[in-house]
Length: 117
Image (tube, rainbow, N blue to C red; front, side, top):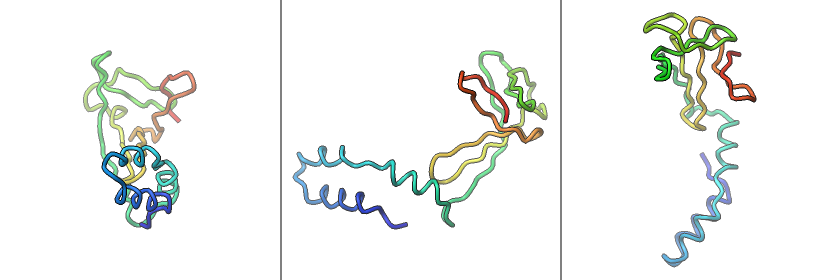
């Protein structure tokens, strides 16, 4: 994957800089644009990984359940609604959590409440 021009310029500055000046050069590097570009464009290197988990709530002492649009923390160990598929991409740090039984994703509304969508 080719590096963005800003990143290459920053590296050349770092390599030629005096050791005391390296810290100033590192602070000017902005990786957000590079990460956004890599996240948008999926390539052959990025792979989606699927894993099956159960999320335990220490508050309720039970497992998180995705019951369609409703989320509950009252699931027993092994309950079919407590089985969650965690989908991750190898680049971009995107994580999606979906109820295996209902195919609803674990989301958060504007008030911070967990909901299924």
